[in-house]
Length: 260
Length: 263
Image 1 (cartoon, rainbow over the protein chains, first blue to last red):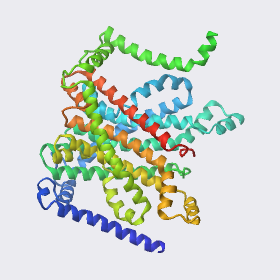
Image 2 (image 1 turned 60 degrees about the vertical axis):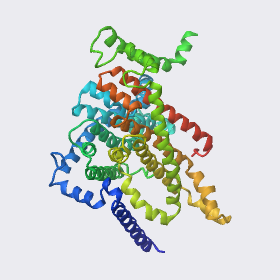
Image 3 (image 1 turned 90 degrees about the vertical axis):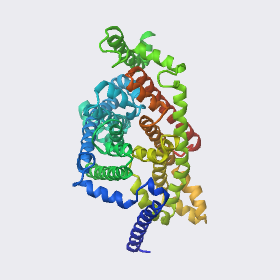
Image 4 (image 1 turned 90 degrees about the horizontal axis):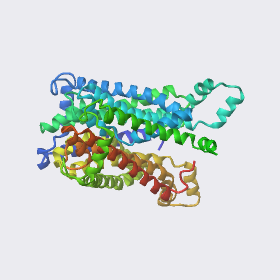
């Protein structure tokens, strides 16, 4: 089998498998199960109908997606910025590490979702509380990876630079920072998917718009089609986010071929 | 002598001091100066008292801390182990057999980007708010993580090692069990650990939405009645249990995959 033939077989298999899945789903919900589960057609129809035109709740699907995305982006970039700075300085200076690492170790194992009740008590039900949660979700992963990245810089590089007379500043910016970028990017990627899960949880617990709201409102109204439409949108956006991230990473870290 | 001691443990002492300062500031601001109401930010002393009391008391949410913990652990481990038991073989099959790969992966790629806890509302509608819905959410979570990591692990097998197997006349089954699976073990364990962390998180979320027992339920109830001290006790408990579960898996990994992590 040459390469082209192989690709074609693979494509045919993919089409066959997805079609089989949809047909099984379609037939499966014909009988008794149909009262609980909608078939694939109503879900896809509702997804396209609400994308720009019709509304779920009081907004179209696109607006709901934007609400969730804006929350994720605000918290994500904030957390990433603080995390990179803190992580690098923890890896760079033993004093900073000694001060912050015990506190960080206490906070890190608590999943961001477990902060939801306390953030509502402290900050309230508005946007700030959700951004705070997403901040935590991205902050923990990014700090951890930046920290270990900066700690694991090959000591030979550092010695070589010192021998050539590099100052502390040069050491940090020309050696430690670039050497920890791959690790930081790995952290950023995990953080992005964790943020995406966290925003859903935060919206499920309390909000009046966004993708998490769509599925929880669907549950409260016993509207399975709406839940599945929401899940479809969540999956699509999640996939897009990680695709964009991989493209950005490939662009910014061209030298790092070992990743992926 | 003293100076030598100080030098040796300088950073440990700074670490201890840092924790102590945070606790002290907390104590001074809330317990002594009463900066905020205790219904917003509880004092250190009150939080500690709540923890001790909650070990034996059922008020205000109908179960002691230990009962909540057991309930959460039971659901989490049930869904997690089913997911791992089904996910790892499927991941191996997908990575080893190209027909499995081509036929299953497209469907799997459809489901994979949905975070596990997004299934919660759907499963609650189908299964009700009992143990089944939560176990299903956790099952999906660990199933996906196990498949992804097992698949990548097996795929990373060095072609050269497989060729060596071919040269010595190993059957496909021998190549799989003697070469590919041992190579993939560290990755499989990474998957198991990611899955456990994710499961624990998804469980807390599911319990906050619909449950009548469990740590997630406890902190959500504590919020409704404005008891931040109880919320903090629950949060720390969730964090500690997650950490302990992870450490146990790490120990198992060093026992099972001895010497395979060296790169």
